[in-house]
Amino acid sequence: MWASSGSDSVVCLTYRHRYRELIVSPRAFSAAALAATAALSLLLTACGGDEDGDPPSDDKIQGADKGEESPSPSASEEAAGRPEIKLPGDVRVIADWSQTGDPDEDAILRDTEQRIAAIEMALAEQDPTHEAFRFYSEGEAAAETEAYVTAYVHEEARITGTIRLYEPTVTIRDDGTATLAYCEDQSKAFDKYLKTGELNKTPVTKNSYFSHGATLRKDGQGTWITMKDIATQGASPCQP
Figure 1: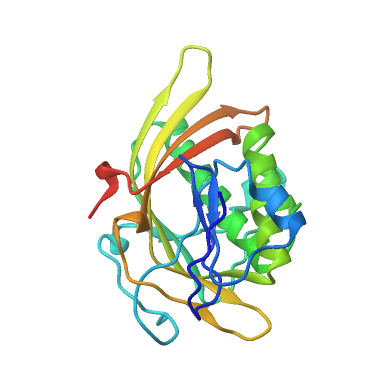
Figure 2 (figure 1 turned 120 degrees about the vertical axis):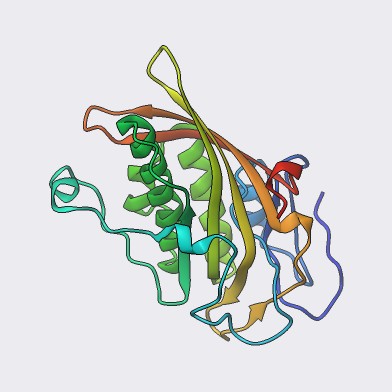
């Protein structure tokens, strides 16, 4: 179901995993964008936060001092073909999680952070098939991300602000695959329209926080590839 609030605000793109619907206010997506996003279960962005003004670059988020902002690959990682992630100055992805001491678990956390940052890079560059997010995802995860970015491209919009990742739980299975449960704080992330620079800012609610359940595998180069990432909006364990 596609709903419109009829208000004067610009579009707030919020993917809802359970109902797989896109809330649009006040104008609807084109038919192509609707078709591209109707079956999505990926939930990566939402509107929320302050009432007016651009998000300050030094905006503080609870726990943000524990994480690091989307680190670029090291020389050895670049030699392995890892893409360089470059985000606009008004976009931050903060991984609020610590090293576990287990090489595989730490690599899973690092590569997941890089994947989320790569998606924001694809939005900023308006490229639905961006090589960066495709490096870190495949199958269902890659297809849903492509459709997700396509919807933003149709609206000539991207995300501005800060996305925080936190509360990770990693499980490595006997078959070599892994699962990662984690939370995402989108209360400081907003939709930004490229032609006008307008932001869509709405109050923070429980729906500004999401839980994720990802399934990953390690490729021959040691990169953990996300095959699936199912998100739930307003999940109780992720509330502040």
